[in-house]
Length: 101
Image: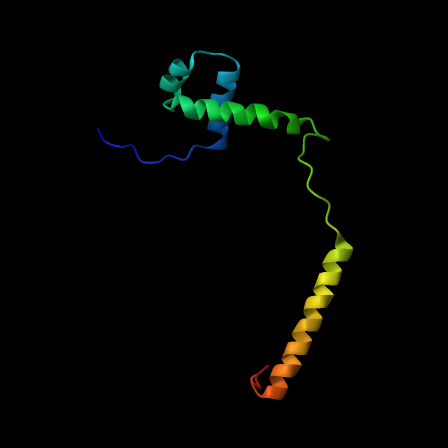
């Protein structure tokens, strides 16, 4: 018995199979044969679909991304710029920084 190479399925295919499982369009064995996918994989996709379904109805159907704290980012940029200036000056004094910069 030869081993089948690993396959990557498109998200639309996964959704189609998971929806068929949710709708009970057949037993797992029938769906497995129809879509040529292992029954365990169908169950996993179905579980993912059901777990992520609530996100579709959260605030206009979009996943909520954590808000970006601009003040923190600007502070970090300033801190890194200060470190770079300090290190450049220190390396220049030590003669380790090339003169081409």
